[in-house]
Length: 164
Image (cartoon, rainbow, N blue to C red):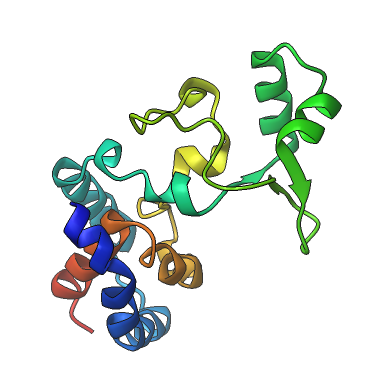
């Protein structure tokens, strides 16, 4: 996994145009059973990929925090939401709450998440490869393949399975 993870940025860069062109064609002619296909590819890939050997998403990027996420996590830490925000979050250029810094402060040295049961929705859904109406998030997926080996593998398998 380490070697693949080290190669991932250059692999993603090399495949970026191919992936982008594929998604462009997919938007024009969405597969009838795309959601089912994506669910299947997602499940198949996550049988092969163990996030605990990677955690690159937690090490290199941070999720957006919704108000519900902030309420849930502040309750978990027995803090007021304002204290949670001032301790862990900042407002980014899009006016969204994001982590003050990466790696994620909730990530342990063993790649386990200390707030896994109450983690932000964006973390729970990452890398979004099993989402309904998958073709609508192609730009997000193109970004995620740069950080997530599973997302990269799902897209590669998708291109093999769905001939456009």
